[in-house]
Image (cartoon, rainbow, N blue to C red; front, side, top):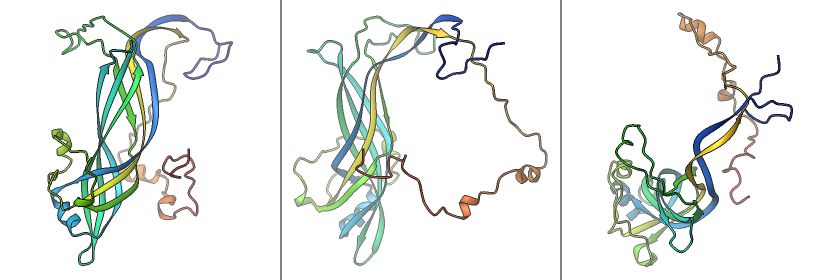
Length: 269
């Protein structure tokens, strides 16, 4: 019996059993970016603003990407091309320190807008499906935009007086409800005496996809080779005995190999 072909690279001797038509999302165009986003205005929550107003300095602790809102528009003068507008919402945590009160935790929202131009081809067919919600409405002919991003790196943070702030500050008109829910104390969008500005490093991949039918070679059905591992032990102590002791949790290593981490060396390509 010939060796079974597994998912992944195959040699030239592998025999294709049949060609099948697969419905999938075909990527028409994509791009990747490494954005250095300078001086994003921090919209603090109401509990943090009092600490910021009395602070003499600030330092950043972490940045979390909460959501990316995506909008796709056709480019009228360039056939088959589309603009992809992405609005990133970040939750920033840091500390504001003063002479009298020491360091106090602060939390706020930063927003970053990004636009890219990608090829998405054309499609005028109206697609109906029998799935719930799809039987009565046709899909548009716009391609599907997909944004992949990791949590950003905090590159810098600074505290300024309002009179020293840039007159071109981005004014946030409204915030989606589910974003506001991430800040239980509510956000302060105006009337600050001092403002905090954050510089972030953001890695992202953006692509345009369309439903397509592709002819694919098939080697065999994809049957799992690994057996499901479970436990029929009634005694939890017997199960616990077979768990390896977590030595690394008690004895930190002498060196850390972070060469593969995107956060290991800021500024290196």
